Length: 176
Image 1 (cartoon, rainbow, N blue to C red):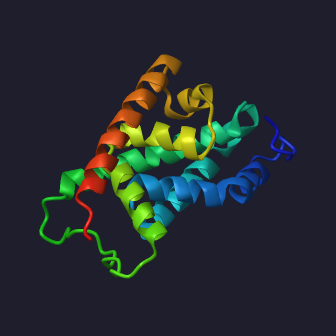
Image 2 (cartoon, rainbow, N blue to C red; image 1 turned 60 degrees about the vertical axis):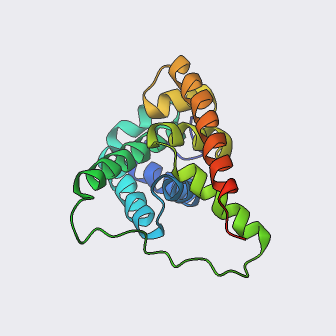
């Protein structure tokens, strides 16, 4: 894949990937980790790693999948580190303010969807987001997450089931 940029300048290729995918990549990472600040940090880390590996970029066939693989690995590693230190007393709950009671119905719906998505383990959340929200094919997801296509299909099936259950649970306990 050429992405419309000359493949003889690896730094220009990384800059092009940033221009093309930064907003979508940030959204993907935000949905994986749940906080804006953390997603911004992970997006920067993703592009730093991509820049460090820029010499390999001209040979990469699917640059979008390559970039999302880096982002997924960065996010999964960050989530693992967070779990290791979650017991520390300065690690509180989410810092996001509680939504007001008079918000529009669609905001409440979005919150329910986000909570249900956040309830999924990252290993299932990532392929579901890549497939449903970002339009990746099963093959691209397999490449991005370093999985077999059969494993991607299985994770997608299980992720949908877990999401349905989490969403039904969230919907059932919603405040009036």
